[in-house]
Image (cartoon, rainbow, N blue to C red; front, side, top):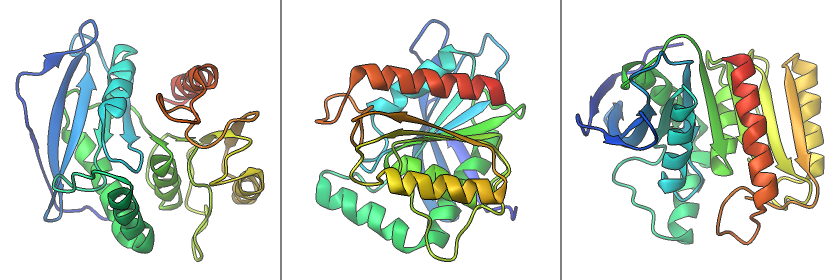
Length: 250
């Protein structure tokens, strides 16, 4: 993988305790000339089990991704919630969300550059571990995970929570080597059962290890608290599936 120009620095040297011995703090990094505002959580008292990158939904990096990072850190992982939009984006509503995600969907080269840049930046985060690395993501972040997988990123596992499942023209999974877990609702109006079936056929043809857990009747974003489609039981089940998958592959 071609090395990108990166400069990384922690925004806060004194991290704020979050869970038990977990340290959790903002983390600023750059890819090329663009600055990104991520967040890192880890337990400095234990040896990391590996690094897990978390890709946010279309509304940018929020407390939800920070909470997920801290939960992973409490389990022994180094967690890096990345920022795909850039530190100056500050999305405030649906129009901003559509504009920011649409720009990346329209420029796949830039999309991948930011994702791959975050992977390289992970080498310099507090608690960084080169033991193993995975990427998980929600909705837009789930689509980003699959974009990263198709890009041939040298990771050990990929997890998509109700992500966009379509494969853009000209792309495939021939460069994907790590296993993929798909956590999806059977009633998702964004990527329906036919999209899931088509993706699994592609993964099978490419020889990519994969598994899908389908939640009956769940719509899009069923893991997002406060949303109209949130189903707590399924959200907990999906999180447990993801943890088991990470434990098995990292």
